[in-house]
Length: 216
Image 1 (tube, one colour):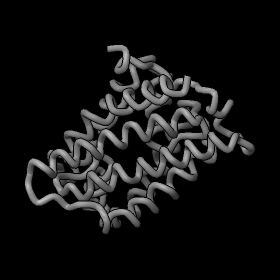
Image 2 (image 1 turned 45 degrees about the horizontal axis):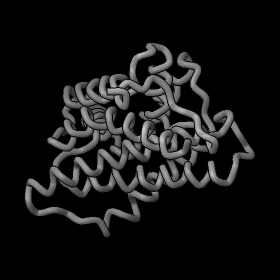
Image 3 (image 1 turned 30 degrees about the vertical axis):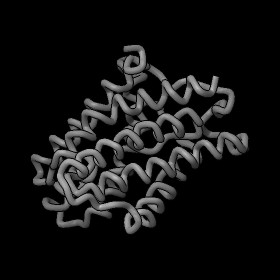
Image 4 (image 1 turned 180 degrees about the vertical axis):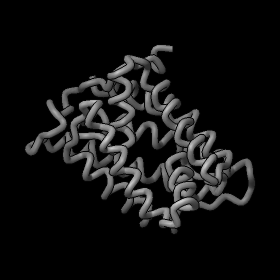
């Protein structure tokens, strides 16, 4: 399907001309923040579904077992390591890269107490799927803003440019690799981990396609 064969981030009338832009349009900033808010909400939905963690959290947990550092500290260090991988990929940062860390973390912190914690397994799975879909669509919104991706999304778009493979394939490959390493180090995986790993790539492609289509 065309939706899942997207090989680059589309540009719209509200996209920034370049990631490092210190005077973007107000609409661009609004769309960036909207995407990041929804991204944090999607992550929170996955967490409160209670059927597994996202792949990068599995990696952080696995590393915490071997290093005895906290998951929070390792999440920060992993982000720094991913940013270093941007250098050979010639990926550009921007204000969106900074806001990514701040807004998503804040939304997760503030939304967790108010989101549902399903009691039945079926509802837990549905909530994990919904969270993954929201993360994908949110990624489409803030990536199209073109004000700099977050560390992991920047790795995805950088690898896509280097390989010219569809974004969905690149994202799925990265998530499975991270899960595998985290699991071998002792990280905990669950059904939501698998749903996210295989579902977030197509969800990002869906988000890119839909937002670009609406914005034409």
